[in-house]
Image 1 (cartoon, rainbow, N blue to C red):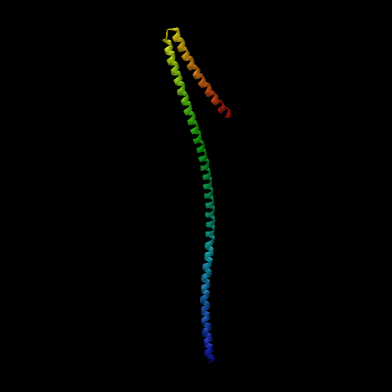
Image 2 (spheres, helix red, strand yellow):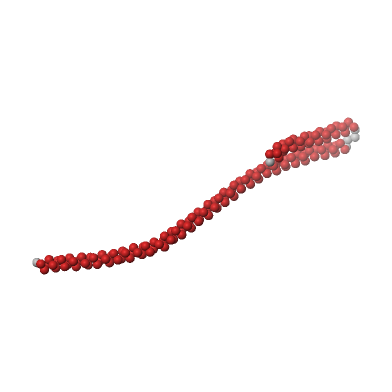
Length: 155
């Protein structure tokens, strides 16, 4: 009976030793796996750090481009406003030129009419018409100058 108990204990010890060896092998494999994971983690951390720096660089470039585009857009808007203003000024000046050309045509017409007159009464009337035309043209010019004076004084 003692031998049987001893055999059972020996068998149990043998099983425990085998189990211990098997667990040691697992432990060695797991330690090895853990070490390789740690070894792989370092390059991955470096790669993550490098990618993070690259991301920050790209973000900075995007911000600079956005600000540049914003400045360009503001400049375009200002130039568009200036262009609209200049277009208005050009239209005004064209209108004034047309008015002056009409006055000149009218003056020429009256002058050619006066040249053909022969009586003093007709000449007086013709010269009165020319004088009226000149006075109207002068009054229009004076009004334009008065309107332009506050503009040039403010600029």
